[in-house]
Amino acid sequence: MTLLGAIADDFTGATDLATMLVSRGFRTAVVIGPAEPDEPLDELDAVVVALKSRTAPVDEAVRDSLAALRGLRAAGCDRIYVKYCSTFDSTPRGNIGPVVDAVLDELGADRAVVVPSFPDTGRTVHRGHLFVGDEPLAESPMRDHPLTPMRDSDLLRLLAPQTRRPVRLVGHDVVRSGPEAVRAALAERGGALVVVDAATDEDLRVIAAATAEDAVLTGGAGLALGLSGPHPDRARAGSAGPGPAVVLAGSASAATRAQVAHAKSLLPSRQLDLAALRADFDSAVAELVGFAHRAWRDDPGRPPVLYAVAEGDELETGAPDGAEPAGALLERALARCAAELVTGGARRLLVAGGETSGAVVLALGVRALHVGARIAPGVPWCRAVSRVDGEPRAVDVALKSGNFGGIDIFTTAWDALS
Image (cartoon, rainbow, N blue to C red; front, side, top):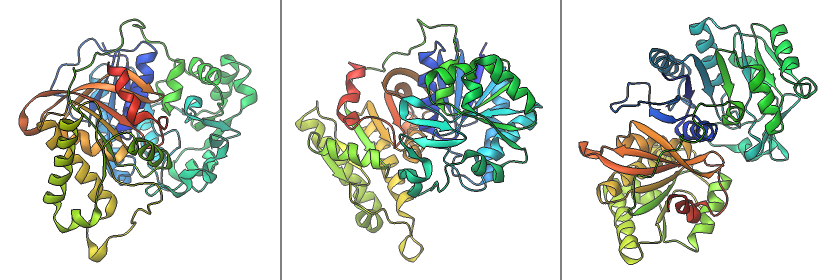
């Protein structure tokens, strides 16, 4: 019986959490969307439902999250983990607060901790303020994120307008005193959403121990570090097998731009042309697909990189004469490329960007991701079955948050599958 159920607000966040659960001994699969998967998910210890709800309208995010919750409960999950980004990506209205409120209401639960910290990726919380590396969130590159610009670092201030519940803090002094102290502090803050300071892996283990009996956990993937699954030696899925590989980079984050710049000197690369896509979408996509096929033919060992934004580019924020916005158009183009490339033989896809990852997985008709080898903190390879045109094809897919991974991830990720 499945023990742990998780609801993730985007696809890279889902695989981020899943790779942490695998490392903690949970045999884990990621299910795409709230609907029932069309393949068996036997012998699992955890199921993570991947939604595209991070930037959806609030009502839609709540609806889909509750549908996912009900499916997880029907599958036997007795604990629920609401997973959001470790940089707390949200708008003033949500969707973190409204979704957590809805889950607590549905389960009749009293409170939940709020723990976005993930020290392995540089996310820490001190006195309720979220840091990205050494920078407060509001002074990091997330300040100018195109979808969720984060202009405040205080999680209590960010969360208060999003929830009907009071928002409280448990500070480092309590966390460093151990699980019993944290448990007592949480009991005093009943009925609240409780931000808990955490700057180290040990802090996360303390928080996990203190909340071991809680029906609902909320946070980034880091909180899972303190959980213990029943199969530490048998949690990892295998590869789908060898085949042509491709990188599809849709993220405009500073990290992904640097990764693209590094890869361009080592791998065949092609940037998507917005003007060409607007003028003749099908022809522009065909040219990109043809470029990838030529790259495979000329040097099968060097995966081609199709990317949306380069260093120094300014991503268009509007659209001429009411045309499709640049971000949506680039996302759609990369998803079409993915589908045509898999039909044409691609078996390994590394996708950068949360929205792009969601579009690609949906375009491939993937319903479940079986989590395998870790590439970087928060980034695993996953075994999946693509059903483009209804034809099942085994593929390996890595879904990378825009901000995750080292500068060489596009050139080294493949080593984990060797």
